[in-house]
Amino acid sequence: MRKINLITLILFLFLFNSCTNRSAENPVWESLFNSQDLSGWDTYLGPKYDSVLNRRDTVPTGLNTDPSRVFSVAGIGGEKVMRISGEQFGGISTTREFENFHLQLQFKWGKMQWPPMRKGKKDSGLMYYAVGPQGADGGFWLRSHEFQIEEGDCGDYWACAGAVADVRARKENDSTYVYNKDGYLFTFSTKSVNGRNCQKFPDSEKPTGEWNTIDLYCFNGTSVHMINGVVNMILQNSRQIEGNKELPLTKGKIQFESEGAEIFYRNIKICSIDKLPDFVTVKNNIANL
Image 1 (cartoon, rainbow, N blue to C red):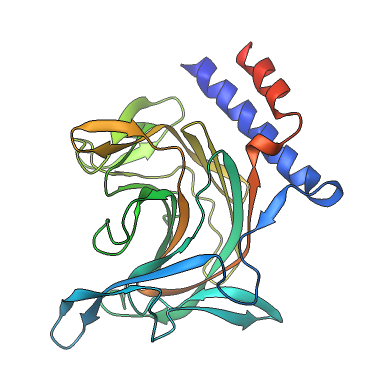
Image 2 (image 1 turned 135 degrees about the vertical axis):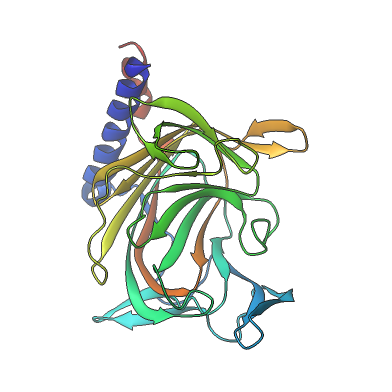
């Protein structure tokens, strides 16, 4: 098992260097945000929260209907960024699906928070391999793996609406699991006895108000969570529950959550691993270690 972990780490370090080093001389990056508008993205807002009655409506606002401009383009420090106000729960997702990719972006927290999340940690999330109907998870988000973006918890994993993954972790108590590269391989999903959450390790998030860099690598059902250049978690065997069957989940949309807190995203770009000219040779060499 340790050999598999070593091979995986070497492979993803290679992919990191390949995408980064080629960005100047022979670009393989594709920008997912044009800094002008939300072209290439769909918005979805679930039922509104009524703070007076302390309950949610039963009818979602729906697809590409955003009267309160929860999702918009904003100016910060002379540059245009994607702003998610957090005022209403929902998500903004790419219209396209991706597989075998390196996604990189930066985020930082704003100041605003909204009921029922006015107090406590600011919360959002990066959903990947996102598929199925809008609102499948809790009435707000797609079926997906969640790369948690929450103050103090960035890099955590949540399985959403039928997504399933295996993660090496240590069990701290009946409901808490923490990533450990040499730990036991636990399964996480909404139907797993282990629950659907695994906590990252270590913590590498910068203080609130500073820009943080996320790198997410996905290749053939394995994914790596990185915050500010530090590996926080490796997930294996990505799949999904359909009826009574488990099926592979290796392709899907990218989605960002609106979940009660203002957050800004910039430099959202993706690198297709399959298009790296020397990827196959290096992958085969690593497989023979």
